[in-house]
Length: 79
Image (cartoon, rainbow, N blue to C red):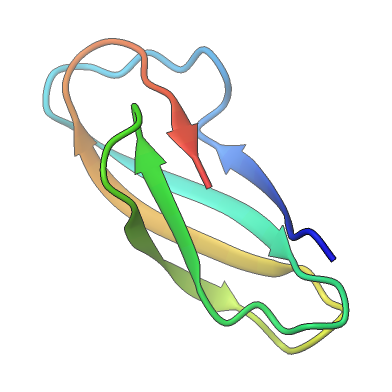
């Protein structure tokens, strides 16, 4: 099964101000396997761990979040 993820925030097109701290929030699903970790990256950089806020077990969507400080402009976030 291929895991599914969705970034809920920030929304597409969100413009970051200089040195702004942004909270990335989303969901992850791994089918009958539990979500035990989630990682994200910004602008193709290094993968970083996100915090699992809710991960009750297999067959359920997990919720993750991470705080990152970004430079001004638009960025691409991948999970």
